[in-house]
Image (cartoon, rainbow, N blue to C red; front, side, top):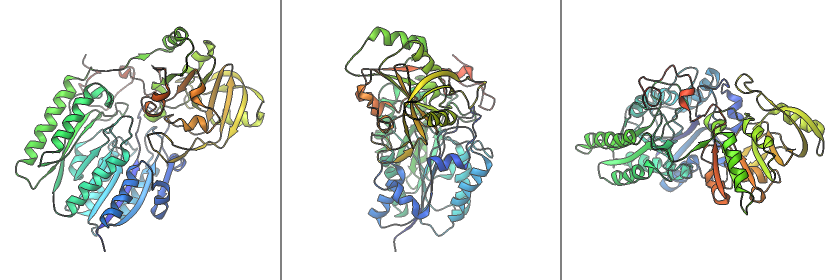
Length: 494
């Protein structure tokens, strides 16, 4: 019998400015699987959980998969949802495991605790005991807290944004767990941060300060006393005390001087994050500016990709803000596609009209009309579907997802994908599932901040990022923070 390992994943990136609470239905609509139902969903995919299964096969573990749960980023996780999710996991934890392998996000806020992962790790540690190694993979945008670092044996964050190294990160955590269970290392973890809620170019790994920081992660990780070094860009749309960038170092506590060296590395790298805090390599345009740029560019053999950064559901925005769409309609853009706008009521109205039917409806702006009102539109229904698709691009490759009942509504020269579920548009398959080839369009609008670049970057003639005043706006001073530590950059310091 091999070593007994518990595997679990509970994820959420919480935008505390959202009024849309995250309940169990939100998890069920994206993915909530227990026990034996986990493997068929994840095996062969670019995911951390897939790496857990492969590591178990390679090392001969007796692995117990408990739960794999993920919900689209939104507001706080409800007490009911959290008690169910954490309860399923904690009920399986005891002192009989040789190791515990977790895939978490690192920016979960619940109605119970602003540090969801810290509270979960503390509860797991209490049940498993002080000596069981617990290795945890995290999103690059984790808000790492002291409680997380103290209760995990090792924290291992993504190193790419877009996050195309999810499987590889799961394997890093699994390899460290195996070494710990074999007695080769005694991993411990620490974290460093500065008075900032944003920085490190928001984690963009293609340019800016992250290039040098990631190089240092690799160099320091090769030191004999160091197991892993991770840089976290943080998630600034969480109004919690310890939001912001951090550096975590996992070190071998059996090696002399390892803890001191780990602290030295973490603080030195955070000095760089602080010094480079204003180094941002992208520009956000207002809607009118973006329309002017498109008009000036004319037609081409590849599409211009418009990214609605601030209403990105992947950052917890509502995904139903029609501000950018209104600008595109007013500019009379032709050969354009807009993906997506979440509006279950509009989907039902279009379904009733049927394909080739005409509707006059309020579109979007229904989750919080006081934040942004609906847009009155007239359009022709050109497609109706159940909204299922499989990710084809470099992120989440092979994973199934669903937009829920979905329609394509043609408004002038713009095909608008209207969905029941909220989701970030990061894969060409979202358009192709609706009979639309984005490569044949002149303009492709997506609700995404950066993840879209993995799939859409290669087909784009130009990429324009638009701040349409959603909940994930880069203008952090426009948000009302109450709980974050103060003073903090950029709220209190230039």
